Length: 225
Image 1 (cartoon, rainbow, N blue to C red):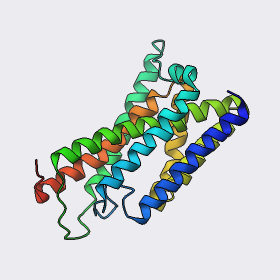
Image 2 (spheres, rainbow, N blue to C red):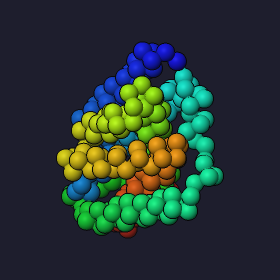
Image 3 (spheres, rainbow, N blue to C red):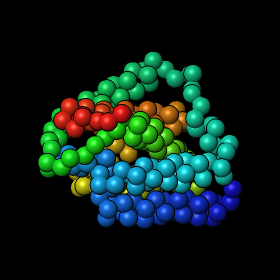
């Protein structure tokens, strides 16, 4: 794919998701819950945002970078024991950090919000697929394309910088956290020329943060079936 067309594709996908995320933020529906434990106001809009992300971050770019997409999902069986140990340490570190943050979240309101088992299943399926698409875009196709065009240092800056920008609708702490998080994930993916480490780490981080909070609220909100 010609470099100019590839850049237009990446720009279109990013800008589209940036706008959609912003619109969801205005409806307080861009996250499952905020730092005060207040849940999304529009659960349908939240899942729709994730589906849009699956398409614009994952499916659409992958159609135009099919060979690179396949290569980035491959598992390097030649990875050393030290690489595996480092990956496990990072996985446990991010998981423990997410659990710590989850334990600090308390209910910010007395709102009554029914979380059905069916909706929770739909949400977490969409959430996991979205995170896969997210990492395929930022730490996969975009990162390695930029490495080819500009070199690794600039590619890492672009990939990490854009993740910071897309998190402008969350909070300052999460935005700043995207910098070290992005640098670590980019380094992991570049070292083995694959995107799956970023996918596994980000998914683990997200689920370790959300599931404990969901469990905390389910004891109070009594989900329907």
